[in-house]
Image: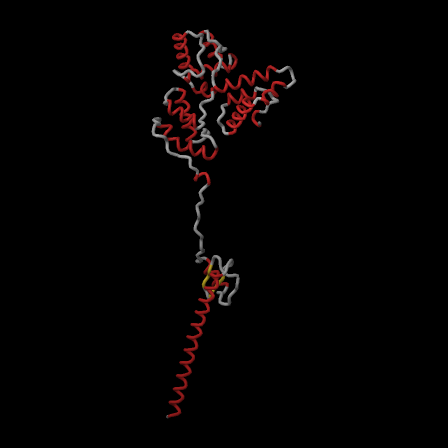
Length: 317
């Protein structure tokens, strides 16, 4: 009986030791896994499997013994969650510029108030406010030009646009967009009141659109417009050549340069050299070159400058 009891106690002790050993081994495995996990996050640059867990991101290059079997790894791949770093939105250097986007309080035109922030943005990006027509803001700029020629913008609004380098309509645009019959009626009324032989100023303050329209017709010439329109103008006695001289600041600086180049004898280049020696003329030509690069010089003025001389490259002075 005593031997039997001793045998039972021995078996029970053996089972307890076996169970304790299993518990210790499991605990050891968990500690080792935890330690491996810490090492993984402290290292860099390779995914590692640790005791059945899949870690992704910047972790250790080392390999560990407790990786899952290929079959289990395949099943877990579909459930794997990858770490995605947060996106960082960077601001361009232009956005930090100090150019104000608020429209001045004196602006009454709804169109100008609406497009003003776009004008400022275009200046910040490209150095000028002349937005191409392919955008909504570009169409609003076109509307502004029409309002200016129709004398529907205040003097302060015109001055504001002029100061930021806004380019108003080219004469070609005025001729194409204006209503011919309406402009012709206004021209007849102008002649009835002023009797100048249709010598209307290019910048006619009472009707800027009409002045620009007549100037463009003269530039196109009798052979440059439709037959029906030419016949109607001829019937009025329209003067196809203007007797007026442009009094703009541009022309006042342009004419002396043109005349100096023309005064030189054939082919000697003396006129061009005289222009190059004149500090004031060269300063003005450089200013026109810079304005052209920024998009602030009209097509008409560019054409005038191109006609000076092929030997005077005003664009690269």
